[in-house]
Length: 321
Image 1 (cartoon, rainbow, N blue to C red):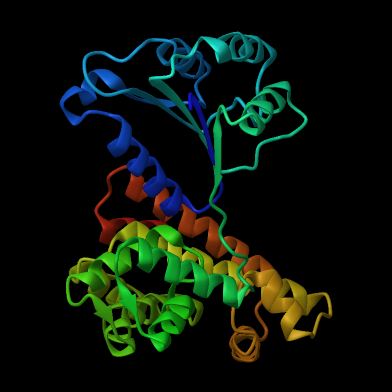
Image 2 (cartoon, rainbow, N blue to C red):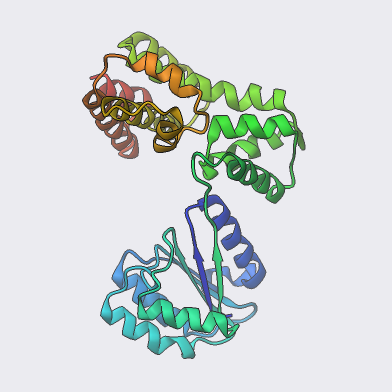
């Protein structure tokens, strides 16, 4: 199948599907010649993917051209549309163009219609990987179980619930945490998840609570402790950002007179509506603009980290400076 259309916001599942495709189709001995990884956000690379896909593989195995952030079925300029349609019937059976995008293909586009027609004819393949909504408890349990199955891990029933509460729909972190857990056991108990996952998540949230309470000393001590245990600085910031976004939504909805905890939890992406009662007391008297300011400072910390700053310095200078 020359065209593989892969989309959805479950990045971890998408990546597993892509890795499986590569291992099945591309001879590892000829990987450097028959595997191309391109970025569709660059118009030149999107056009290059069409040229490479039309080229037969060299030596053994098949050719695979991977185009991340593909524009072809989502936001395709007219020039690329013409090139794409012209290339469709010219891709050899032993070459594969893998189009990847987090967004659902836009059915109004000529390119999408062309691929969908070929999919119905059995010529091409489409796969979608979607995360459950933050308020979809059963869907989140299925995500955890599906990921564990993909990693050949067995989870106790209560362990699944703890992972849902600790991680939510962050599929990349979920896979990472399950890999860590697999180093200790193949059957994952609730106690092991509490020890290795829930404790870390609670410690990160405690840093956020210290910031909210305007206790910089406690926040810095918590941050440094997490870094010393090997926790990723970017993961800490991602968790803190989610925490503050939840506060912002609760604050905004409270300000606009919304009192239904189910509605607030759904809007804030909080899986357990009972947490809203606690958050209301915690946030009492704090205006939404305070949380907007805090989100801006977290973004500054993230920017400093990505520019190579030492984690401790990035936290102090960006968030508390």
